[in-house]
Image 1 (tube, rainbow, N blue to C red):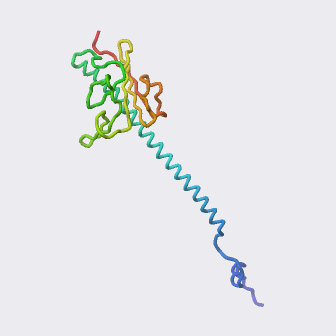
Image 2: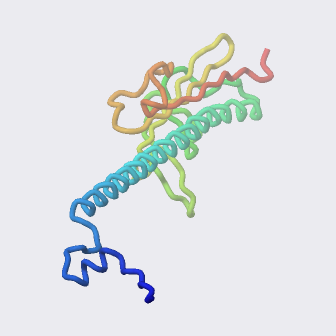
Image 3: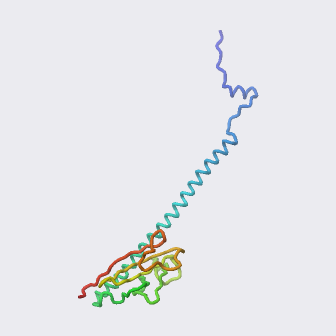
Length: 192
């Protein structure tokens, strides 16, 4: 007796016999795959855009925080220099809204300039009130009497949302509004 050989698969048999079995993807399957792929790519691009925006916002808030701290330190430097020179602690530190930067270590309170420009000096960038390249940041230093001491608020704000500078007390200044401030109380040194 002769053994039977196993037959080929039915798809191969149909194809060999002139049937219609074909291998591949239908148009609907291709369209569904493209849809799923496009949704994934769109979500990924949206995530990247959101991440870059948040990173830029965080960078600006960090620079603003450092500029605010610098403002307080500049006023503290005036007080410390007065002590070294034997002058009254708060000589040259008057109450009000003032402008101040590292290029001119004296407070400008009569006609203050708040806008800071980016100035490159010998390869190092500085934020100064002078210069031709606007940085987008503005710094306002508010000074108040606090008994025999002085309360210093260094307010830094940026962006287009500020038609009028923030209040001197910093009450309308929050990071969500593109505004940060640093506060310090300076005491008199060596005075009775």
